[in-house]
Image 1 (cartoon, rainbow, N blue to C red):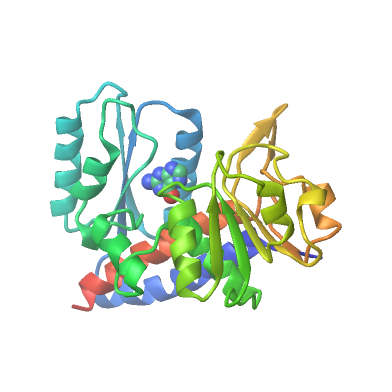
Image 2 (cartoon, rainbow, N blue to C red):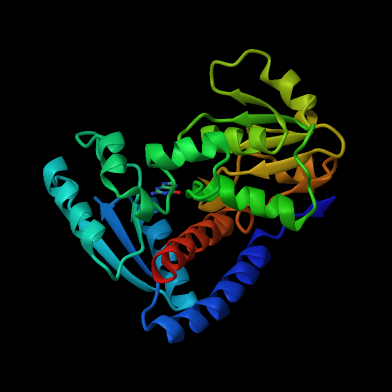
Length: 283
Ligand code: GUN
């Protein structure tokens, strides 16, 4: 069994970008910039946003965090995004999700200029992902997972893949990115029938359900690749969707929680922001 070191791979990617960014910063006289908007006081969102800002500092990017109250109107939030759209110091814009119920997430996503959409959630970037046009931005978490596959020499082509979760952030884009790379993909959700049978036959499992202990040792095939996107807190301790102790006895590769996919989401964001910066300075 190989424990996939997301933290280590992420650090390697960030160190490389730091070096490349230093060179371009010197050449073009400005840093890459990320604008982050957080609405309300969801504690998990605060942690994620802090980690993203820390990563920007780590690689030498400029960043701006805009913290807005949970009762801000959709119109005012759109105004903040439009300001970042126009700001020449900002190459990437990220509005942390989820948003309060009175705000339409799709409308917010569509307000961000596609060329600054480093989350890869704008319909134009989603469309580019669907057709395999690599000039767009890929959603950070599945992008991070693909980086892990590349780092560990895991080729998804011809692999029976089961994804649990159909969100726009993880499940759906992960499916599209793996289809693009030749995998045979099933996207499951809470209504899926015989999910244990599907898991048992899977060469690759990606779980983004947010349910602790959802996948047990008996659910996985010998030698499978198990990617755990769940971040759950049980009795104050972080854990994923997979029973790590049981599954690691059988699988070929597995990501731990924490230290697996989480740091790779950040690496994906930093890579996307750097790509946007390069697109602008080298125009
Ligand atoms: N909430 C959970 N994951 C993400 C992400 O990748 N981007 C944004 N903007 N919000 C999230």
